[in-house]
Length: 284
Image (cartoon, one colour):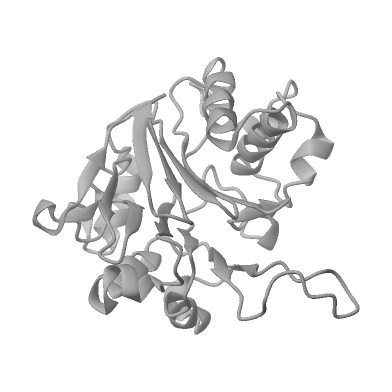
């Protein structure tokens, strides 16, 4: 179970601190005291190099993607402050609390990334008896498909299902919606809250099978004196970015309505352009 944050700007490189402010970023990163099973980030930014230059290798693209993952919690990792200050047209940040005791290895850190697509997930995909999907002998994708994501966890399986639908010709929002529908057939009570990003867009799904916070999560937060922040654990909220665009985040740090934060309803999807900053919300 993890904390997610993503944003898409109106086509300009803005840092996480530009988007949220330094104080709010500190509060978000403070959650890594609890979500301390590693962290990661994926940033899409405009390059200082002009696109289409033949300099002896591949033609320059005009933009670039940075992927960072670590098994160290963000609050102990010096890179967290650097990445919070790095400008990007679009970005994903992921603070991990491992589900179902899945191991603390780099392969299970998110964002997962392949073919220019980055993916982060908050959820534990398990059946009614607590058996995680990784132990399911009848998976909806092949083991090779899962390995192509670079991961080994339930989240990697989810991403692999998204990629399968993309390979069939669906758009990114359509592929996310189809993957949720597929996985819910066998795991209806699981959380499929996710954020997916490519060079052009951010897709956010709020698709929680149940809304209540599990006693395990409440207890973990209680140990750190932050029990009040465990409320609405699966809630996602979004607000406009002052410079244009939108930022979306899991709960756990200040998201006051007076600052423009609105709840993304359950079973809804938000799709934003990181070229124009325009976005829409619609039902899954």
